[in-house]
Length: 353
Ligand SMILES: [Zn+2]
Image 1: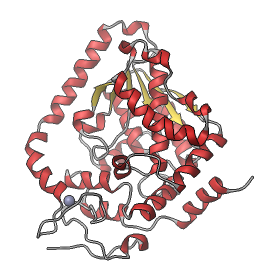
Image 2: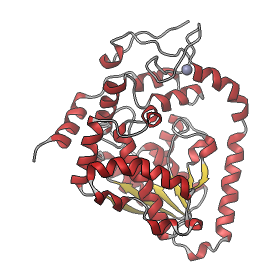
Image 3: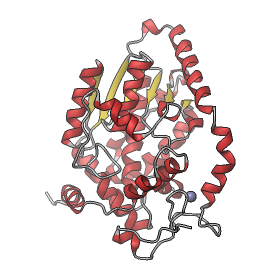
Image 4: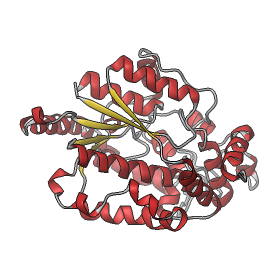
């Protein structure tokens, strides 16, 4: 068996970590166990589920087409947009948006959350792609002082549940929590019946790829993010979350959709497709982001805090599903975070001005 014992990231290599021989989950991942061949419990469970997944993709594509028909029948002419796209300018959301526009012919309002760390190349991509695809677009940028408080707090302590830290860094979870509620709130206010996300198949499962937002669940999810952030950034953070009036009409809650779960996916296909629209890969971001300059620092904090990379769950899922080569996944996860990127983020977050 080819047990991978050498890692290049000094933070991750200090203990000559055991890494699953099938996916890339390390022994430091919470709750993991290995069999005598070095295969982790998640891979063993996946083999049992694999047959169920086959064919599921086609079913979800049909489910989406049925939803579109249903929404068109519900007075589409009274609405300005069919879908609000959470558009980061990264490769996955760019690809997703091109599908929604060109394959599904939807009227899209793209919204980009500017967290103060969008790569310049990503900003150029956002402008270019929305123009090329003929899509209306909004940049939403909260005041920097609020973001600074949130990110610097998330960099120094854990704010969320154990489960959330297995899936993403505390900084990412904070940012995404605001993005998700902001998109939901805007969709409700603007009467847009769907919110689109570019989640990769490793980030979010097929089963959740078309879901109507459920008000009681949203209320709970919001509290989990809002309460810790409020302690840090004060009541002004309420601005980005739902208010009581938004809950008054559950019918207005949109569907969340992430089409990459059922569309065929591999990294090369996506790259080839989005390059046709002029998308350029940023050279200044880390290996797991194609838009955010804060990500390397967020990863570094997480690795030091928990001993595993915050993207390892996502990437391991993709390796296990056969949509990313193990070698490629391994390189994305077990390489050193750029010291330059880490320093840029630290200076911006902790400068005393
Ligand atoms: Zn595994």
